[in-house]
Amino acid sequence: MNIPRTELPRVVIIGGGFAGISLARKLLNEEVQMVLLDRNNYHTFQPLLYQVSTSGLEPDSIAYPLRKVTRNSKKCFFRNAEVQSIDADNNIIHSNIGELIYDYLVIATGSKTNFFGNDSVEKNAMWMKTIPQALNIRSLILENLEQAVIETDPEKRKALLNFVLVGAGPTGVELSGAIAGLRNQIVPKDYPDLNPAEMNIHLLEGLGRVLPPMSEKSSEKSHKFLEDLGVKIHLNTMVESYDGHLVTTNTDLALKTETLIWSAGVTGAPVKGLNASAMIEKANRYEVNAFNQVNGYENIFAIGDIAVMQTEEYPKGHPMVAQPAIQQGKHLAKNLKKLIKGEKLEPFDYFDKGSMATIGRNKAVVDLGKSTFGGFFAWFIWMFVHLFFLIGFRNRLVTFCNWVYNYINFDRAARLIIRPYKSNRENLEADQKKV
Image 1 (cartoon, rainbow, N blue to C red):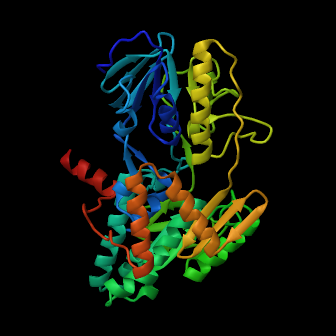
Image 2: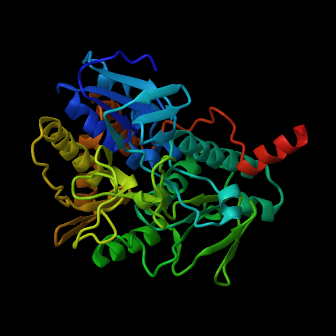
Image 3: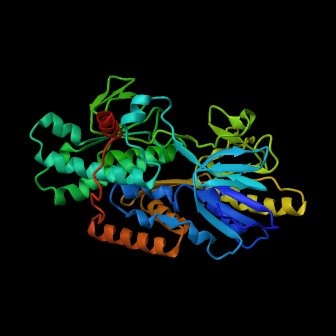
């Protein structure tokens, strides 16, 4: 990897998400050689991916170059690499660009979409975990609208204008609200020859309420906000199959649609090589102690979504959201310094700053301790918090200007089909034809 040899302890961080970048920033001026590895050369602000997929923001508004993190230190390096395996016995990682020896290894690989073994959904549904996937959704939504304008068959037009989202957690709720806003504000102006009433948004949730991780008050308010926007909510409904055209469920509900967006859950994204005892198999995540050390290893750590730190308050580990990842990254930086100096490590103590979700224009819910807010005030808090945690002044400024423009003009400037979308199914069929 062309990393200089050094007398300093080498800390290798796998992953430039919230956890990895939080740790990396705290190690910049310390007496360590830090190497940050990621398959992408940018950090993605995932809470705003849904706005990229619904034409509210361009992708560069929520992406931050990882080399900007390391460029001000001669002891810190970034490599655009995909780590393939870990040789813990010899302190070596193997990647697509070569090998690297480490003194301390931090795994911050985050999570990936969980389809719960449903192969038909995995093959045919839209995913939204990365910027390219969000752009795929944007292209498909716009392509379906363009096709619906010229479609003469009522059944085919109905399928094109049926948008089905699976999972009513924060991602599903925010995305369905954004698509409803697109229908209510943009379609009447951009597509005068299309009846907005024909465009239906269906939100499917396997449990008995929307936003299950949040309070019941927030759930009730979100449910009402979504219904006011015209979103059709189907609770206690689980998808059984999707062939690219028809969604079948565990109920009598069956929907013809060309767009199924899956936001029903995530699972860990581990790296091969560690002992089975280090993993919690059902969660596909590493079991860590109070210091974020992976079970069975003293110099290998895991932070963020990939780590399960079981406590009395969080017996299944901390929530797989940004705040635990950020806090663990900062805390581990302190503990690494202590470990190098031979000092006693301090256990991690998570401070819950609350949960929030936005449903659309002037509509959001916020859980803060025992208090719950809804409506415009919660929406304002949501905007302020997301702007604050965006990485980079430029990203904050561009996002703020976009939001102001969209709010004043009831518009979304990024309604562009930059690259036509091909579904997983179409790509597979094209590959089979080549063979």
